[in-house]
Amino acid sequence: MVTDTPKKMVLAFLVTHFKLMSPEMEIQLSILERLIHDNGHSLAQLATVTRQWQYVIERHNFERIKLTLWRMPEFNSMTRRNRALVKSIWVSLELEKYDCPMCDGRLRDPRRCNHTAGSCTIIKAMHDLFWNLSAWDSSQPEKRLALDISIYSPSDSEHYFKYLTFGPDTPSHDQKLASSNQLDDHKHGWIAGKPHFAPPRKALEYVHREFLDKTSCIFWDEENEMRWWQSLPEAPVVSSILFRLQNRRRFTPTTLKCMFSRLPNLETIHYEPWRCWSLDDEAVTDQANCSLLESLTSYNGNLRKLVLFENFDEQYSLRSLGTSNIRTTNRSLGRAVARASLKLQHLSASFIIEADHFFHAAESEPAWHWPHLRSLTLTSRLFSAKGNRQSINQMLLEAASVASKMPKLETFEIWNGQVESAAHFRFQVSDRYKAVLSWKSNWEHAIPAHVAKAWEAVAHAHGKADSRFVAEFSVDDTIRINSHADAINYLKLFKVLRPVSLQQILAAHTARDKGLPQRLGLTRTPGHPNATSKRYIRSPISGNQWAKAMTYYRKVQEEYYTIPAHEDYILNKFNHMQRPE
Image 1 (cartoon, helix red, strand yellow):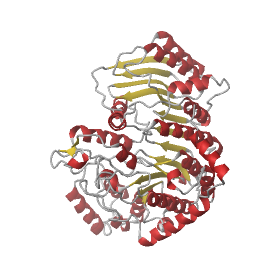
Image 2: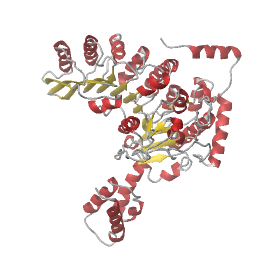
Image 3: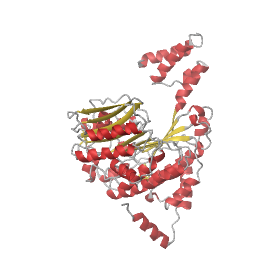
């Protein structure tokens, strides 16, 4: 690897000599690729060396673009010449700072704090984003975009949650934590770099609240919100959308349903929401997610891949909220996911549903088949060291029955991970001559012969009659599992969530267990970690942009927050109070 000082020397040498020399282009590009992959400096100055170098450097610089509120107005003009090189846009929306709920001695309602400013920011950003992207050429599928949307406030990591990180969808290679200069912030429970008490519930709600919900007072109901989204142009250039778990502030499922309706060529959805912090919120969100999943087949006929990963933190559940560290899964949501997967090629749903509910829904609908599905990954809470072994084997039999309806199946996985427990079942057809059944866990379990036989029948049913069937088992009860992220690492399930998301979970657990230094290897949100939050220290947008955003926000609110007649209002309230089964 090129070190920092030699790299500067190489840069200076290339700029001053390569215009006068004519070495083989292969050597030049080899050096250039080395510089790009070990890049700590701007490479723009090298674009003038040759036309070939200009192309390589521009391709590198424009492949992944970070789009902020500041850059939104001139985004199209900035990218017009090199638009064909853009593969991914990271929409990084920075919100205003907010007051800590404890710093001023008052525990305010987090749903009201800075909510207008945040909603105003989101509304204007989505308006500008979709109008910008609507002008992009979408006629060539290979030139379509991945859209990565992230929302944060610099205050998120300044008080109780000093280990929170925020960055692009590229894992950092520098995760080493320093051994000195550790944080002290007794007011928020941090002593020698470690938290000594759990954050209060309202602090959690500040960081994990929803946007564009009822409390934002901008859309009266779902119908009005859909009307607003329908006023925006479609963005057919977007083929993939990503909401990573660093989005602790969530769009509601209703908002996502409306957003996806404006993306007609959407092929991939990668969604990593956080678990709700109360049973009531969980029930309402599950019901809304059912509606979201049902809409996917009607709005997005091109959808091929769906990755769902509901993140959670067992320490929050037990210490701050008093709720169960294992969420209660919703049977209707499991059915909705199963129905939505009928036309997919790839489905991964971790923790948001129970695998057993998926299989029961499939068994209750004999006409259901998955003609295109190549990979399926689900989680089951039955996969636990304390789980009933007979129930596990029965579920694996049901899974084999469902898998027989998937003629193109290549990989079928069921797994679970929590404190002290990790387990993974996999059926994989590697080629036409080999089908592998495997089990890996840190607790004892043996797959009986009749279960293995059922999966061997799946291989034969899929036209692999001449294939070799292999069963592999790996149990190591010495493995220590401290979180679901440890389980993912141990089981090597690196496709159930984004690699940088896994890295962020592991970094948070490491920080709490071993102490947090002044500087963390991952990208941190702006601001010193010991700073006291002050409002309006630095606005994420200019005064002129803010004035335009507020004007547009008021216009939208005036048109789409129309209070209905009294009878309609009562009916709306009654419908909102309904809970799923």
